Length: 449
Image 1 (tube, rainbow, N blue to C red):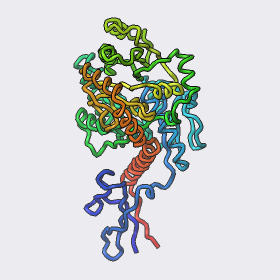
Image 2 (cartoon, rainbow, N blue to C red):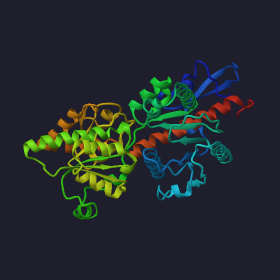
Image 3 (tube, rainbow, N blue to C red):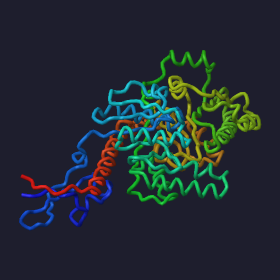
Image 4 (cartoon, rainbow, N blue to C red):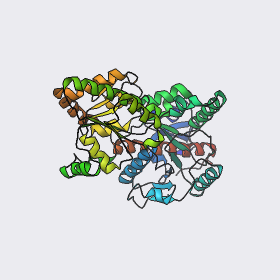
């Protein structure tokens, strides 16, 4: 006969203190007080899911769901959770209009209106009040932020990259950079768990902020399911010809237009490629299509086009909806993406889902994401980029081999697989918080019958 006692953290309960990575799964050790010896004795170890005595209330901050990168991640994680989990309660905190971008969800998903963009003190206080009123067990913040906040429940934070610290911070004063670094470190140290979208991003978090590896979980991104709907039809290609006047072979870049995306070197490499193709008498009508921001925001790109002498062969198309973007991926001869820095890098995978050969960088997360299914180049070497493009254009056996590898690589990443791991992490973090509360408020011992 035993009297139940509070969970004790002693030499018998190393599983309680170990990280999930160290113990394989989060568990809780239970002890009882022997009536004969009066000593604590080990009873059992239960998975954390059995330690929780209610469904988990999860808030997800969706206020940045319309942005590149973060928005794609948030939409697809919520959709996958909606498919997989009908037990826990989810509160999607943000604009009702933004929720509509996710699509149909089960009744266990509820929108909590909050119109603030997440950068004001007023918005922080409203967000905190919502979490407290709903008695959330945890909140998932699907992007990195730098201003420390005191929240009424544990938080899980997703880190996509450290671009602000690796590139954009160069324009800031040393004092501002230092404060930004220190504040972001506090945010990360306060998280119940940190989700990194690649091993590269995980190593960056460890090296830049000194966060222990055991606190960081790698949960990969995946491509939007709309890119998995098969090849472009003849009707799709007709739209390409009629709406966009594309009736010629083309290389494609799709993504944000910013310095680290290296679009200037893409244009320079394309100019060198045209000169080589002219010598070979091949692809005289080849074009470069750039899909991304409006060109008016980036006059340096127009100057590069004119300086490189390819103003008749480069087209900037601005924003393209996903339904048509998949047709561009499918029709492109090569997708070129020599980015200088990526935390993950979805566009190469999106192109691979259509069997389109990819030339991308041998730096940051990209080798991890594309595996052996792309040609890797030094993104700072224009002529190396050009030679890779020339090789893929003219060598049909290599194109056929890369096409096969592309399909296989794209299948390695799945939002459902990632969402299952995220769901496990929610349970682990909620259980740890409940366990911590039990430790602080140890119940009085009662006699068990």
